[in-house]
Length: 112
Image (cartoon, rainbow, N blue to C red):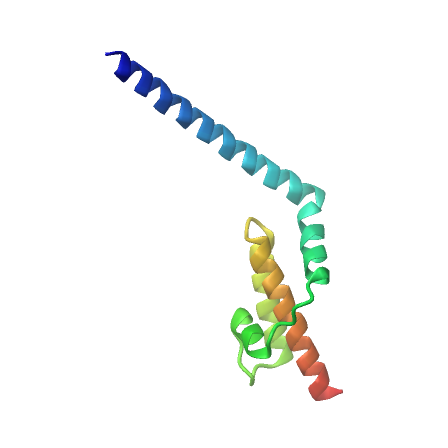
């Protein structure tokens, strides 16, 4: 009998604690997005990265081909970047940004 009561208390308590943690996490994300901390973090990560992305990886990230125009690349970049800016992944947003930078260098090399 006592074991059932203790188990019931533990299960109820862990459910309440789990909901509280989830709510705090959501609030922290909302606060970061509202204050611009999220965008600043992404920009810092992008500028500090020393590893260059390969052209084929950049094309895979953005879902474009060698025959894609720069306008198509920018369209895919904007769509993916914005999708991850609002409730998405900062890591994926960073990958999308680095992919665009890589392809921008490639296209500037072709035209310049």
